Length: 106
Image (cartoon, rainbow, N blue to C red; front, side, top):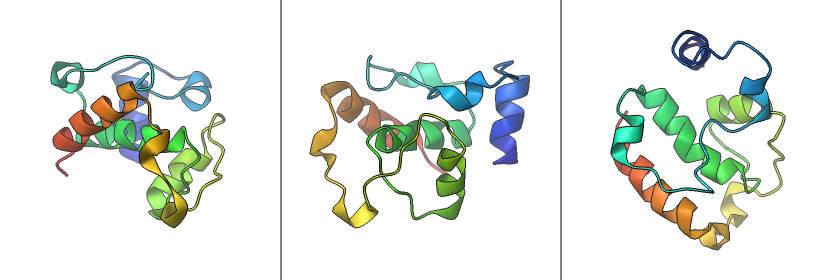
């Protein structure tokens, strides 16, 4: 996750606590296009994808994702992976999840 911290500080110039207070993308409020991610490294695309799950309390089994989201002030883990139901996603989240899943090629 050091790559993520470096990216946020050097590329997005976010060096304050805001990086921990808000999700990186508004994938629950607007539609994104592939071009919106064209300058982002794969780690940011992967985080964007998993933020969609994190907003709904998904508890990550991947230790890196778990640690990352536990460090976010907005994240409240409430649903075990095996109990998660993706019907909670709104239309923006469904469309954006499909997009970032196609782009997440690491």
